[in-house]
Image 1 (cartoon, rainbow, N blue to C red):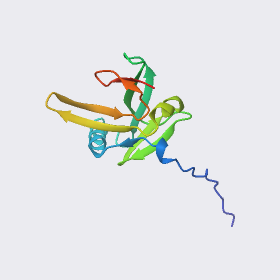
Image 2: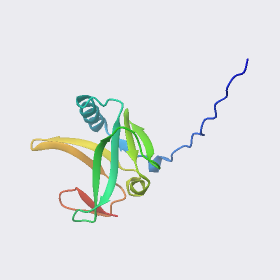
Image 3: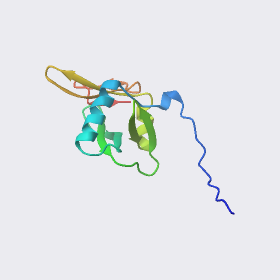
Image 4: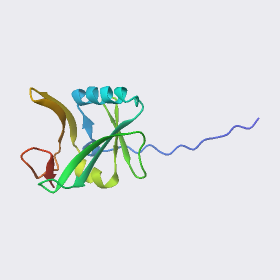
Length: 125
């Protein structure tokens, strides 16, 4: 009887300062959105793109699977996909969901931002 052996890629530990975390409030809202769209196995893509009044702006979107070179994180039960360029701007960042009397929305607390615009949706690094 022959048995087939499977070679698994080595697990590479991720340094804590490279992690992107999701607060419990944001994780609950993300799970709710994924459930509403019938994509409970999907995750959230977190990215940075040029634009906004400070030079860069954040982007969030539902992602079914990661792309080539993406880093995959999990925080509070939510999968996060981050491309190689964005990860350098988002090391140590935290995704939160804030619900106020005027409405709610996702925010990103980014220790790499050297300045932000007044509305908080763009930053410079």
